[in-house]
Amino acid sequence: MFENLGDRLQNVLKKIKGYGKITEENIGEMTREIRLALLEADVNYKVVKEFINNVKEKALGEEVKKSLSPGEMFVKIVKDELVELLGGEKEPLVTDKKPTILMLVGLQGSGKTTTIGKLGNLLRKKYNKKPLFVACDVYRPAAIDQLKQIGKELNIEVYSEGKGNPVEISENAIKYADEKGYDYILIDTAGRLHIDEELMQELVNIKDRINPHEILLVVDGMVGQDIINVIEGFNSKLPLTGAIITKLDGDTKGGAALSIRHLTHVPIKMIGVSEKLDGLQEFDPERMANRILDMGDILSIVEKASEVIDEEEATKSVKKLQSGKFDLEDFLSQLKQIKKLGPLENILKMLPGAKKMGLNNINIDPKQMAHVEAIILSMTPKERRHPEIIKASRKIRIAKGSGMKVEDVNRLLNQFEQMKKMMKQFSNGNMKFPF
Image (cartoon, rainbow, N blue to C red):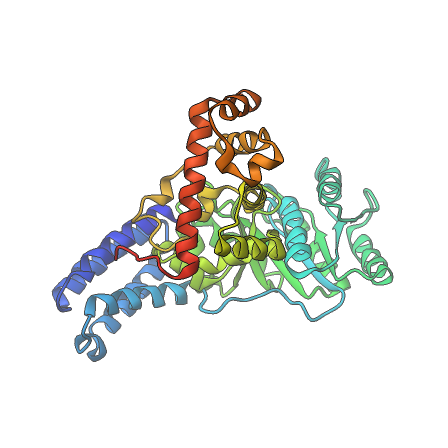
């Protein structure tokens, strides 16, 4: 997501950090490079012009000239302007109504039905809410079946009346949700290949009948500059409360998404970051700016971890590490929890300075973790609790049992011992960093 833009901006900012003072000349040089980077990433040219003017004006101000580190101040200015461009403040979903009615709209192929599944999953996991899916796309072949399949996979109920009247279906669904005590109602509406009068009138009719708390436009992040036309087309007929940008994990320049809030005044509320049903994130301008500029996104890692990791189990492991009693059974338990976070390379990318350390291009083969699990599971409970007893004959038996080689067993045991030592140093506060 925004990787090419991030690389370009980071290179520019790296240069200016080394400057002893800020002058009109070097600011002009830097802003020219930033302008090119933004335009090549498909950011709207009007937005780029305003962005550059704001950066220039602030960078040449008295506060920067008097600063002890003008290069660092320039980086802060660029970051602050980027946050502003992305919307400034995070705009969360409405949460204080019960039931909260979310009406999702969008063109056909934008990923609307899948996004409903992702959103329901997020509401249930992160906020402990009880969502109901409502099938109001009665025209697209298999749309209802698709929503039912997603609902079955997530164990979330789908309200459907088949090929009925979408306005009446949505109204009946709200009565049903009220009776059954649902917290959120997510309405899947029909899409078209393009915006037309018939589509819009039906959406307006649904909106007038049910008065949704949120009308969210699901829009494909890969459509480029046309994303602005799509948003403006819907917003002219429906009072959109937010946009959900899908496919930001794909091969997209992404710059058009940076222009949305500025040009349409519609806030980005969610972004799709993978095809999986947990691949939806709340959009936070500050965190996104940090990711683009390789400043990390530790808060997202912590949030993700808190959703999937057993806190009691993790606390127990930390105490064992501190006392030096952490064994391979504990290690196996931690591995299983780490797997719940999703692909490790996605987590590494969120660490501050990930690109600088080369962590953004690491591909971790899931088979490697499976091999480690196989080796540990081939040990006896006693061997897992006391790995020091694992000598030559035991290593041969473990290797055969796991389908691995003795060298693989040796490597795991060595890495485990090194990890224990390192973690003990961290927990005791004795670890010295080389910077």
